[in-house]
Length: 151
Image (cartoon, rainbow, N blue to C red; front, top):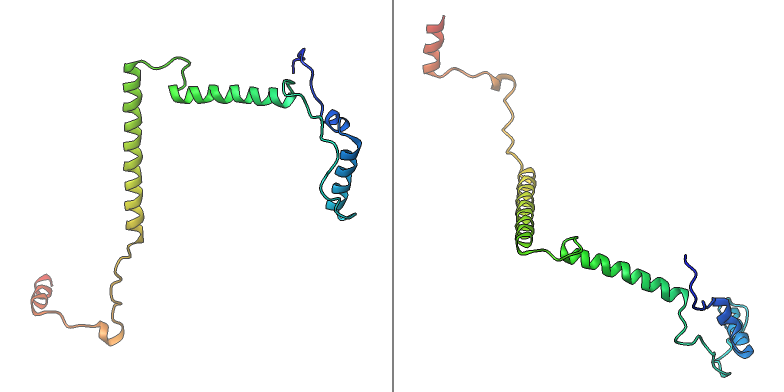
């Protein structure tokens, strides 16, 4: 991280800048939250001097860097990844590719749904074959004639 000429505010500095009454009240509230003492009530002492508004802190710089990165990503997403905008031909090609991809996805989805519907269908089970004396049957008259011819 680069050192800047602007002063950086440390969170410890903010605590040390508190008036003593405010610091004592904060510790009493902390102890109460931990179950170690009575509720201190609402703070009535002098206000915290705070950090001047024109002071740039480390967190301000970090948020600014993240914002710069985020805006660059957003700009690239809107323009299709290039730093420059797309020309009319490139936009038409990109649109055609997007439409083709959407059509392929829709077709794949329909095919998958059809396969799932087909898998859910049950095939009818044939009746069980007769066993024992029921399983022996006399041939039809036409079949009887065929058997004699084959012999």
